[in-house]
Image (cartoon, rainbow, N blue to C red; front, side, top):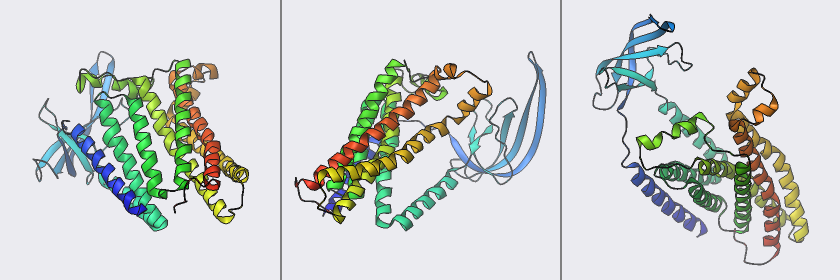
Length: 377
């Protein structure tokens, strides 16, 4: 019965989220991009010409491409690929490659947009799901369902609604609530373990959000330190002239969502451990259950803190190498907003994770020892 209700609830939320996202995305215009296969390379040469700044060189590939979709499907067209030697990103195409092309309105010439990668990504997704199902079994299947809810909530609802002008901080709180409840209920069902985990997750994420908000204001973070955030400043001119993005709220929303996964992992692990300990020895007192949960949480805390910090370090490794190469003093590095943003993001998320441990342990100890309601498995 509980499983049937859980699946029914999942389907209802899935339909609602898909309905919202489809309405949001219905009016978006798509670029005319076509998939093709490179049949042959007609020419591949370097072109050099003089400018006021000196000699300028770029490489140009001309190729025959068979288009595989769209209104030109099946046609052989000539495609140009200009490779600027001054640019770091250089796309070199070979015979047999699958590419994405577009028809330039400037000169009515097909040009390379990028490599086709969706098929390989699809196979990676299939491999991921297969491993989840083989190793996790029914639990793995439920994990995939919860992951789908998370992806639809963020990609299908959160991002489009932000672009429509909704407040990103409020949206992130709503999304966090939806993801937390349905992930835990789908994976664990309606029982004391789920309530324990939800209480701990809520406290940890709220704590991280409040601390990030306080220190974000104290450090005068604007949310537009990265190049990607600065590019967002031009979106209102393209999509909606009346759109006013709040980059500060967008930063705090990203911190909330980034913290959610790690906190969820810690809290469900502690709740599961307390459940197993209680099953093995129901005579344990509240204090004993609490300290058992705390000891387990402390063990998890070290590895999960490293996981969270390393995730942010990994995403910032290029900028760290840049600062190191120029041998900037530590004080100057810390005063850079881009660096300060990542530090606030990483440390507030880790603080939220650590603070969730005692509340999860306390909630679990009280719920399992006090007969508030019958335990459901």
